[in-house]
Length: 444
Image (cartoon, rainbow, N blue to C red; front, side, top):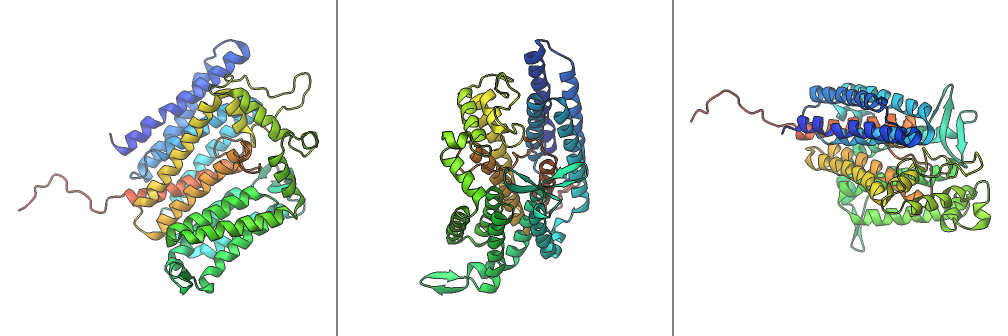
């Protein structure tokens, strides 16, 4: 079967997921099956088919599995948002999905030769850093739980960090393409090659920017996501594990120091370490959310309580059992209702997406494309790790959305740009170098 036909075949599970998901919700709520679920499934299948036809025309050699994986995640996200918060937010999520497809198509058409982005790398870096700092602008930035992650414009709330992650990856891929040899070599001291400061300087600036993000926007999750992408690209560019080790030590030291001097981060760490402490649990900004997420996931067991059976509201009150369940804590609801196996299945889809991104990097024929694919795959995978790790208490909880599943327009739009760039890299990498001869006899 040809690649594009595999992609077409892979879109069927997404449509079935929407139909089955909405059917389960209707049965659970009113004990009857509605044909509306089939309509929703058909609509999403039509949208996915439109995306498939566009890819078939513009990117005929692109990876055939990336877009179906995205479709499955996005469709699952719409179903979960509808189950948690009802039709209004689910409709908005579907609208963001449509806008994301439009932005995806626009990105492909505008950046067909995505290597031209290298010419604007410093402009892209400056713009990305400014986007990180934008939530601290008075009367524009919005504080949520002590962290500054979003900006409020008339009629819309947007998280600029979602766009900044793509811009920083583009800069790092372009910069390291030019300077990877100098970073990998350099003057040897005590058996180790020390890169020239003029080449290492911009990377140290980005480390400082990650630390600045901890201070300014007060969010360790975004800092970890950006800095992790930097180390991933740096390792692939130089093949030096020592850079990764030193980088992790620098980040850990900086995070520890700032965490002990910034009250918000220190409170997140305490909630992480002692979520069931009565003092923290009853505090308005304490561990109530995190502790109840552990209870919900434990109640799910291996196979889950059943779709629509998770406790969302405290009995006898209007208080949410798990605050912001459709954004920060949606993974806890998924685990509670679908169990460990269902949650592991969702993570497997994310892992397959990241694996296809690394596959595109392996096939890429030029350094910029290779580093760009590695960076995009890494920052996407790290975003999943940050939020899932926070919910499951592997790391302190942050407000990073679960890509394509959590409610939020900025996340969907930014990730569709990421997918477009990844497919552009994949199409170029898989494109045959020599077109086969057709209808011609070989001349001896």
